[in-house]
Length: 180
Image 1 (cartoon, rainbow, N blue to C red):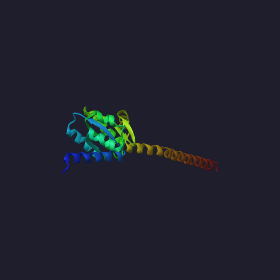
Image 2: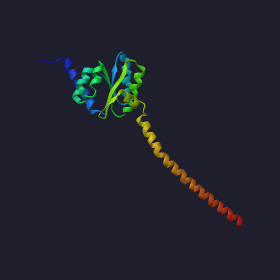
Image 3: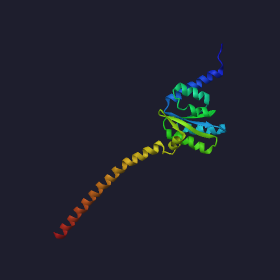
Image 4: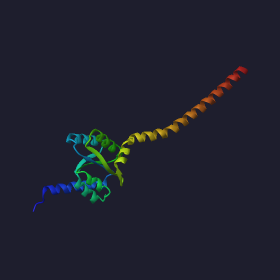
């Protein structure tokens, strides 16, 4: 007897979500209530541009996928809402948090509820703090700038020493020319 199509689709969705929950660097779960599909599509486009994805899933399927992935810490957050969005962290968790927090400010029905990053559950407050950090590229630029500052000042000190020696030698030369 043939299986029902809906059951197969649910099984595939659970399998994919389990892979995301267990295999990626992390994810951020948000609740979606009274948000237009066109606005969610715009969020998805922004997420794709930044190198990540955003998926919408029913809470029951998300709970089953979390259970199969062995992440029981987030069951309470998943039970609260009926429809969930999952922002997947591929590389830059700060960028994902920023995009979701910006979207939540524009849309009243969208709320970032919890997340899971590098094996640790995150509360909404921590995700907000994460979104306020500079981006990865900006942090790298800051570190390089801090590393460059001592080298630049050292080069400045060396050039001023050479300049002072040159001034002293010129002064000695001029003094000998006047005497001699």
